[in-house]
Length: 295
Image (cartoon, rainbow, N blue to C red):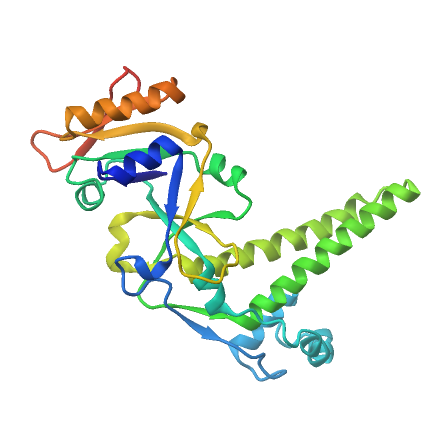
């Protein structure tokens, strides 16, 4: 994933310090950032709504007329009383930094790379997320209307994750104590853990990484720190230097800025690849060329 920069004091300082700056969504330039329709309260049993069917699916029942689900629904909902998350708090707690899928995006160079006078860093997302437990990477969804986020479904998914996680470790402990093979049973709980986690991540993507289709040209990827917090301040995230895969200079970068960046990286990451984004004769395309013989 690629992050574009102007050659200003803060960008160079963060490069020296291996830092990324993550902001609250209200400071971004899209007025619709993190805007979603929030639904709360559990639907009534068997009301025929799509919400009821969605809650049952989150619970593990594919059919809205499943007799077992209908028989136990009210008791299950009662057990989850007070467990619906505060979606607005989740959104306000998130801190976001933005990347693109491509290094040759003309409009990204124009808007964020100072018209090819800046630079772009290619990052390895896995290196950063392995370094930070609360860092998550999401591809941005481009949509015609805001996402719908249902707090009742979040409550069910969290409950199912904890249920399967607790059951997994309980069965694992029994298996070790008795010396009996419980692989099949453990695999069922692992499927439940993974399914709940993936669905929760999808909801976070709807909350924090959905934008109007007008922004599609950015081909955006977001790294989001979802740690709970009580203010709207931005945060600094330090990354391992090994997370940098390459540096792409804009064709119009000043010689001084290019030399400064080379000096910063050559000292701490001698293996880094240097490239350049150049305009192509006869077209409006930007191409990436290697400065060390290998693209």
